[in-house]
Amino acid sequence: MASRADQFASNLNFSKFGQATELKNRIWFTIGALIVFRFLSFVPLPGVDPVALSRLYDQAASGGVLDIFNTFSGGSLERMSIIALGVMPYITASIVVQLASALSPSLAALKKEGESGRKKLNQYTRYGTVALTAIQGYFVAVGLETLGASQGIGAVVDPGMMFRIGAVISIVGGTLFLMWLGEQITSRGIGNGVSLIIMAGILAQLPRSFAQMFQQVREGSMGGGTVIAVIAGGIAIIAFISFMERSQRRVLVQYPKRATQRGGMQADRSHLPLKVNTAGVIPPIFASSLLLMPLTITQMMGNNVQGDTATGDFLITLNQYLAHGQPLYMLLYAAGIIFFCFFYVAVVFNPEETADNLKRQNGFIPGIRPGKNTAAYLDHVLTRITVIGAAYLALICLVPEYFIAQSGLPFYLGGTSLLIIVNVTIDTISQIQSHMLAHQYGDLIKKAKLKGGVARR
Image 1: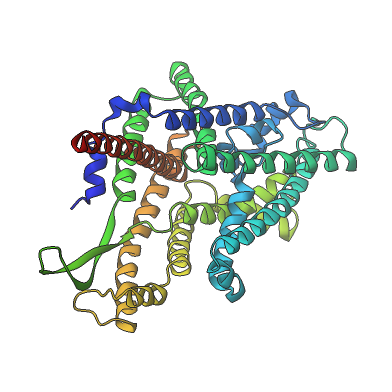
Image 2 (image 1 turned 30 degrees about the vertical axis):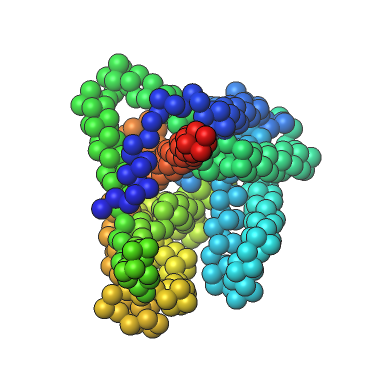
């Protein structure tokens, strides 16, 4: 059953959108910030030959974790711009800090301190972002120097330590600027800034990707049925994701009876919403990054792995079995998604803490004793819905991966990308509805005050 807030939100009058000045300013600020992000994706790193890089990227980076980073950064990694790594280091650092705050008692105490503790954790996240970006930026610079060495093509005009230092400084500066830009969108715009930047990067790749697909259809290398299947499958997956992301298990919570204005007694009831997909997009990102790391390491070595050594034979065999669409890759990918789904949910949701909070507020679940029994019940319910959520994530991520591998699509648009697009869209629309709701409430309060003033006269 929909709540009163949901029912009121469904009756919002969007004809008054033009009167919501603050909301319009927030939307325009968000659009302007995203335009700045797109401009930065075309600013190249100093010392990189863009012509040579464009010839080498497809054969050197296709199929690895670089493909995922390139999709999330809106093609910035392919062009080796100053924001080549996008906001992925910030995402990784924030996830690590979030997990560490649940596992470490000292960080967990900071998390409970309120605003001051949150600021300290955000500071740790920024420090982690700088460290990760510097490390990844250095390996990117080294990989650029070795990229195309076997073909006699140099992607770097003047390789050396000075190029590496300049590249690291540029990449760190670009990532930190994107992190700041995302925070500005969150505070002064609409929606989550970092998530919107990632979604903008993914959507920016779609026109070019579909153009390549239609070009293959004109050349005869791809059938029209494949294009229809891609569009129909994408619509079906997006609809399924939208349904699952809004699905939740509402646990009934009852509070003691209180006196009403008419002299009777009434019991307060509420619901504890437990999302089916509590982990979000974190499990697919972690699982794909771990699986594609061997292939990416080989690619960053400049494809110079020799097969006449034990290490070279091992890497070559591993890359063959972990290629897209291979049975071992699909099996390990599904296992990784399921593992990280349960692991992340176990870290971020504490049934004992939730049961203690309900007990302090004199709330209880009907038929369940407060305290340990409530914690055990919540853990049981969460485990059952996490099984559904993990199966849903595995299905959403494996079906596009298998289809991309079998059909030979000229672009990467996996389940993780679709999850991000749908989640960010739902969150942004919800925030727009919240602003419209607040504006409509404000109009109602003003009208009530005017009527009250007229009645007094």
